[in-house]
Length: 352
Image (cartoon, rainbow, N blue to C red; front, top):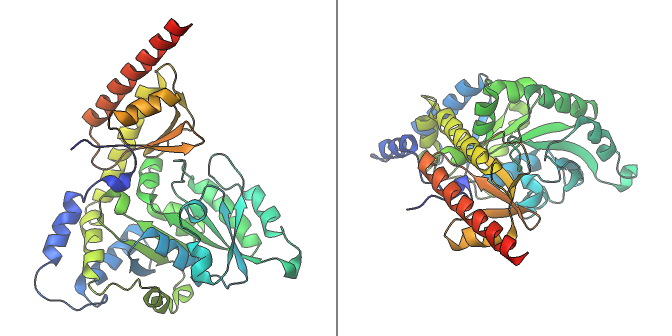
């Protein structure tokens, strides 16, 4: 089956996660997280992050982000986020729903990254008691536009957030891609940089389902298990959420798969940038490539069976590589795009 570039969610389960699921699928074991797989997976996360922390496994990223934010916010609070953040663009109001009314305050920026200098204005955007009180800030690593925060950038953000009494949450659905891109330890872009709560995702690099909410402050995690249960996020057969983490984390497969996806994205970017009619819109820092394509080329590529999303305006497209993207997949797409763009140029020349 042809691989596409619409999303890294379209990829299947990687061999390491599949093997762990098969191993967990033997005999009977206690449910609701009281099993050895869940305990070992939580310990594996602690080892990767190099700290003692509270770990909770949930079904998906939307629930993980929304419940984490709801846990640190009252209904009268607000959460600062970048205007491109997943919490704003792709979660159907879940943070507000699960918090009972907390409002998202959007920060500017065309690269989907929060700037420390924009925090103060957002905190003070309303008239004291008449506006929601700023309580939290959420940032995405890597961002919705494929950009990556360096440890220095995160430290600057969290320092400014602390100055205003804000807790900091990180949406790490693609944390693996960011860590692989930066070449740093995961701790350097999470708790050591001032992050309080992390949504840690491996679905994008080969798991089948499940995210982890990680509280670096254990006291802050108090009774989060009740919030998960109330929200329908306590898996009865928890071992099948937890087992893939063992398969991916224990021998570093999560980072190998992320690095591979990043490398394929760079191969794709390098091939596209040389084509007439293609404009690269953002730097390629993780596993996403953002390009502006002629409308006719978008239509022709879709008609030829290539799946990808329009993401910025009408012709700004996102091309996403996954753990299973092969060089041949990239090269076939580039060959077809090159031919389509060439035909478009010849047709335009004849019209003139």
